[in-house]
Length: 83
Ligand SMILES: [Zn+2]
Image 1 (cartoon, helix red, strand yellow):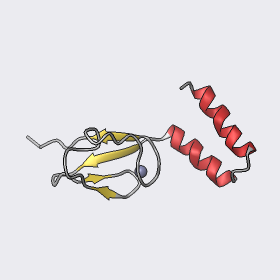
Image 2 (tube, rainbow, N blue to C red; image 1 turned 90 degrees about the horizontal axis):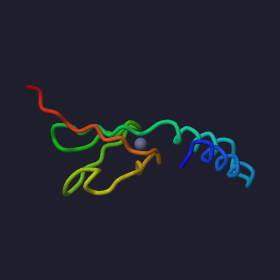
Image 3 (spheres, protein in one colour; image 1 turned 45 degrees about the horizontal axis):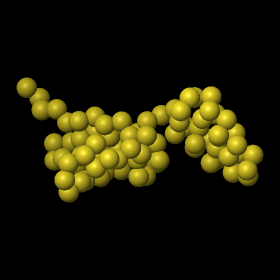
Image 4 (cartoon, rainbow, N blue to C red; image 1 turned 90 degrees about the vertical axis):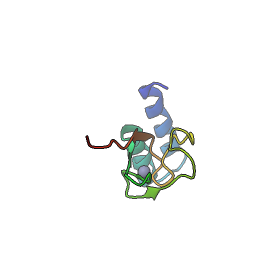
């Protein structure tokens, strides 16, 4: 989806009666991904301060595209062993 179309949709949300707070949140989500960093235990620390653990695989294998907590698109940062 093009950025201009996103903006148009957000403005539409505001026109339909969403609070400015909601519109600001949506605008923020559009701009900032939530970075999920895998730790050495296989848990995922999110950019918004949550920790998630999966029974099997990680966010990619579980098709997580948006953060459960903050709603932002997820950017996955896999754990790397130090050499
Ligand atoms: Zn988040």
